[in-house]
Image (cartoon, rainbow, N blue to C red; front, side, top):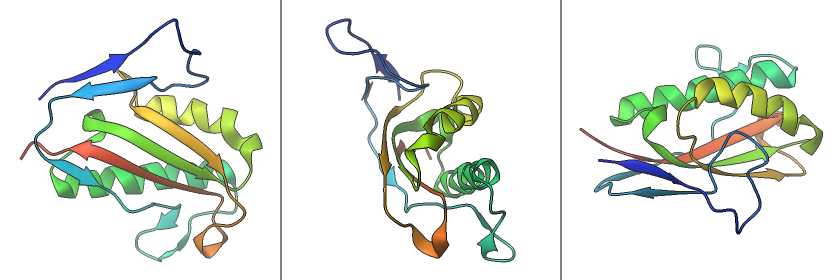
Length: 130
């Protein structure tokens, strides 16, 4: 399985740590449900702060990927739902620590509300290698 980032100067540069597009020869795909910043043991939001919720949502996504036989380095597309688009730059800084090489294609959207009044929700598409 290979994942290759696509970049062209004929389209705008990415405004964060993500690729303009991804090419993959993946045979099996995993589609995640949205993950919010819930503590998996208490089933309640980890905190009322954006940074801690975003970090927990990414950890929850990572745990689901692992269970599915995938990992963050096999993610090809991420969709991020933000309660407040002003959190976009803060999210980019944290996101870059989870996706260090060939970051997946990504969309970020501001929404009116999220489950449990969360501040962020993240879903992805990834390749399965097991």
